[in-house]
Image 1: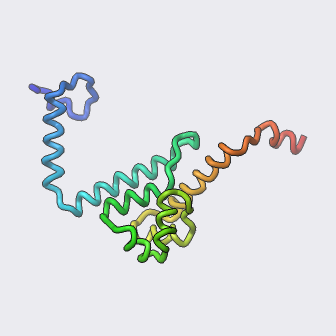
Image 2 (image 1 turned 45 degrees about the vertical axis):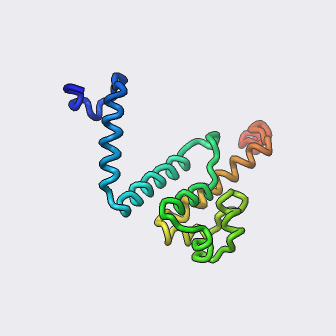
Image 3 (image 1 turned 120 degrees about the vertical axis):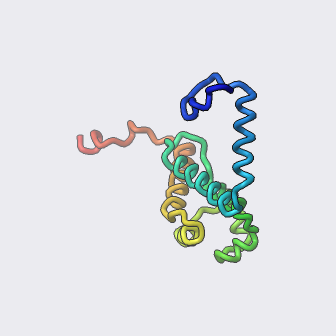
Length: 154
């Protein structure tokens, strides 16, 4: 490894397998020394980043249901689905449908998620809206030529 310590933070494609293994061991050792609370907090930061990244992608990217993000949160906190369903006042089948994308997050559920997990209710609703538009666009081929301000006022 030599003087490569000076290169931390600098992009290099010259990392060999031994350096990669050393970095994996360092990261693993650091992870093992973290408290459960720190691990959960780090995973939630990553999830919030992924959620925000998804919202900022163009509509032609792969669709992720809001329920997938919620399912990941339940896994992070190790919350049983039946307990969570009861906590937010949903039947278990309705929660299961929500997690699978067959049921949408409404205002009530979005606010409960905000209060429980600290993820803004608008973010949950924006995911649902983005996905709804994506589904609509894939099923309905409305042309820009059919509707335009030039045609309307012209």
